[in-house]
Length: 437
Ligand code: GUN
Ligand code: ZN
Image (cartoon, rainbow, N blue to C red; front, side, top):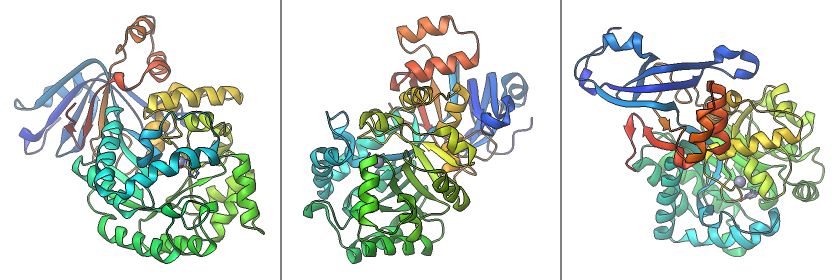
């Protein structure tokens, strides 16, 4: 292979490489690309090539920057399609279901982010947690305060992360101290879009928290804004708990379903991300697929709050775009490995399964597709942004004992998704640069 100019900038990472060019479910084994002794070549923050070391080594120039990761797995950075930057500190708060959990834990935590200094410290810690768990891209709810969105975008920008985020819109059914109005919320969102959307690796998501906490006028304006600006995202919660569905239907009489509320207000389309999607019917799935909307599967949160079991098989039947969401702080881990652990068990309960390959696809390229970012991230095709992680499959004594008996990649990936967490992430690279530990 001939290496083009500027060889001094070339980074060559050697180890066991795994990435996906498609969903292994439905596209067979070739969708999973595996080089047991592979080389990932990175130049100027982008993937130059990826293949067997024996093929690529002979063409390398002398002054290449080499990183030896033998014995470790090299994968694309994880993608978290749904989480909350201001809920880090309430992770693992005991004993409630959604509405009481919001009142008891989420509202007081989010209120603290009105203070820009507090928001900045929290956003920095949140981004560092994502990175130490191997997550390089996330779609994030901040709080109702524009300062918390500014803080998150600043923190992501400083770390060069891909980040999609928005200020929460919420003008009813929440405490006075967390309420905006439809005019103020709209104006604040527009100002944040002006400031951050499309800047470097950042994008803005219009963020009506969920239908019950917005008035019809706020919902209407959110839908209008979403349709106005090219490339803009929209994120919200949908059909998480049965009581929440009943509440939404009561607040919006005449709607066919909870999803229909969002559709009526122009919020259903390509780049709209709906977290949870537990209590849907096939008409909802059909509408979502037809509009190109995406779902975030949040297994740790759905189990923690007792919400229900996400039906991945049915989402697949409709060809829906699905990513994984940690949903911290109702979710119980930043780790996409732990999120896969619980996704597997949720599907077992539903008589379905999650093969390790399908799981790691969801955490990487599946998430990128759900965010319409697969032309930029999610795998190691030439030209992709070089966000990648190095996983040690022997990071703990227990993993070491299990891996000693694992003979196939499938077994090793499964051990990682069952037993792994941030201890397995030995390095996270963003745009080809290693994040300092
Ligand atoms: N629905 C509305 N807001 C929230 C939230 O903060 N967390 C979860 N899990 N569900 C929600
Ligand atoms: Zn959420």
